[in-house]
Length: 417
View 1 (cartoon, rainbow, N blue to C red):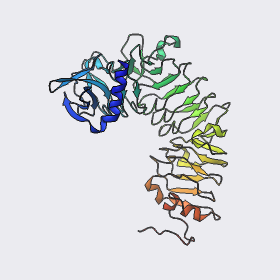
View 2: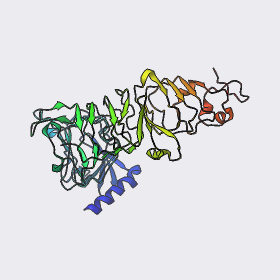
View 3: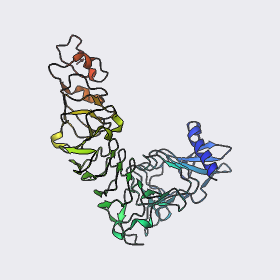
């Protein structure tokens, strides 16, 4: 059975581009392999409608006299949708092998029975892969995992208290990795489905890793309490959430790119004083040792790792001695004036991309920092360089050359009016 599912998953990847479509009950499907009779759920126009099929233990759909087995949830399948299911439960079934990017992004699971508000997604034992961005911004109350899955939603060894239940959150089987946090996860009493929106979530002591995008886009959770056992916070793990403050714990050794990007209520990011790898300077996170920035292994000095969205006065003054800015360090930060130190050598990918409105850049580096990456509209910003700047290095850089450079240089590029 597992072998067949793996082959089906391979078919999803290999044949998706040439898939054929059909629609049943307002849901679109792709025929991935006519011989194997597999299909993939894709985006359907069914907001607020009731889907007759619940995709049970053996999910199939009939079309043109033939039954097709549902093996995957496709890209953006339920994105921005509110499909309704009996008792508010979407059972993906035992044959679902993969869940694609955006499959449940900003999705809500409605109910056809108003006396229950479960709003649950059940993931079967055969799900071998889901995209890290599959559940960004979801409004799901809880996940449920088959007992023989490689994942779990509840570990009896975690010393769970009713006020902070870990039911409905997806962990690795050993409880060390938190993979997906349901956007509407709430406090509840045992077997009571009357929910109150959650405010604070405390990580179980067993968790050492928050996976990429685990809390990304969370619409309700305002605070996370962490433990000294936490070592890794993944890429964009807390991004675009409503978390109001965050301090990197002492034991954290790895911070993923943009781990807190676009979290609009964050005005400063703290770091525990006894953390050996990171430090807080003016509300931003910097490295203490080069090994803490694996994406920029060549950086010999300090690296700027993370900038809060609501940086004070929309001014980011990168600290003196910084030689590198990590990828996504200031992604979607509210920056209007950016000052870069003379020590800066390297800027990582997407460090200043996204939702910002930079109008002035003061770059004190004599040589143009390599790897600069800005949105197109930022090239209209005022660029101020030191008097002794090597202008050739700026003119010869594919990014810096797009700014209005000093008039004294013989190769000055005049912008058309």
